[in-house]
Image 1 (cartoon, rainbow, N blue to C red):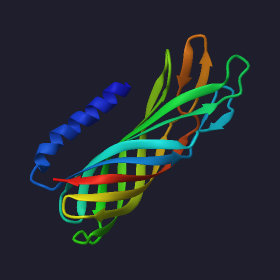
Image 2: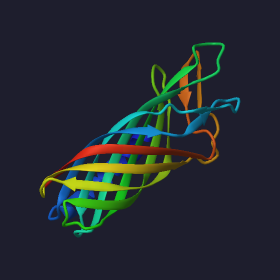
Image 3: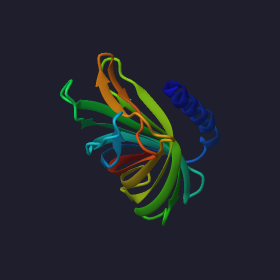
Length: 203
């Protein structure tokens, strides 16, 4: 299911890219720091996710000077320490967001360009290790920041983002047993915040 969702998203984006080839393109690899969110075990006990570093990349196409469309991927390696008699209680988790985004640029001709944006896509939560499991759910994002341009092709991008993942009925989230560790979403909603800094490479 997870591979299917991400494959379809990439194929759809790949089909859309040629339509935008005549527009300006910006590629932005970034590193950041992500916090927030919690998961539950089978007993209903909730555990806060560790705040850790994140990284990813974004690709934007300019529909006009002010309006951009794009796609962003952000990855975090995190985890929780559960209450357990059977093992050390540690469950390592990977959380990935793959979102399509819309961005509005203020003062697009200036070297300092504030922006706001919103995004829609999927969140993948996966346990790490042998016999790992994963779950993918629908998510939304909002954010803003500033682009500091050295020239028309190179700059620095500073972002602040909030992601919200709809987990449906929630249910079993983290736990380990003889068959390995399992992962899923606990509760009805998972939120996380992220701040990031990246390089802008314009074409």
